[in-house]
Length: 251
Ligand SMILES: [Zn+2]
Image (cartoon, rainbow, N blue to C red; front, top):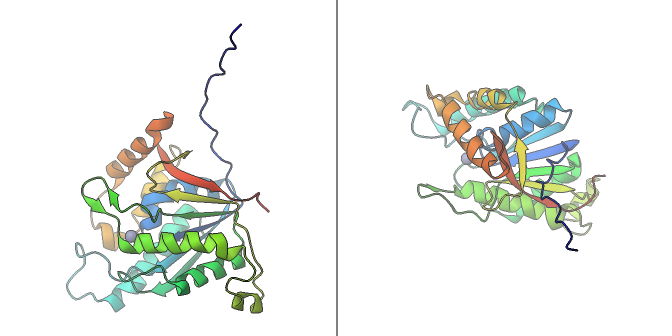
């Protein structure tokens, strides 16, 4: 007698990690891409540390008055990022001070990110996908996004967990740390879906803190469209989709 195949049910949504390091190139990247997931996790008790590799001082040309310079824009964008993080329930925001628009995945950046992973010892790291160059037919992935994601993944593995990579970190008391999981947003073939339908308003509110970038534009409709598209493979009304790498057991 033929065995009946078990129905294929979608894998469950992973439990919120206890401690998370969320790494992005610019203020607002996190809110556009993973704000719903982070809001959901902090509401469940996760501690999230947010890292901005630049301070977004190159901004956008759209809503910025002519008299604004890189120097005057920097503190504005940092403040907007802090406010957005507060909306998401994130208390700690770090700015690494690299130049906006001119990032490269250097060993120096990899070392800085390795330092942070060893210092904060996150269970999960959230970042972008450095391998994606094109989204659709009208957006080429920003080189700062690719550089940040590349350096972050290289910091997660092998640098953070290997004692004799960047041995100068040991001298600062930073012992190796193995990150249990990496959540990569914007991936071509996502395999992990976080239902954000209960936190959509929080995601919108966090993004709207970036007033220097949004001007009067209301991003609600666009975010809802993205969330619907990302949830479709799992039949979710609103989701953020990730490629998830599971590298170790949570410590
Ligand atoms: Zn960006």
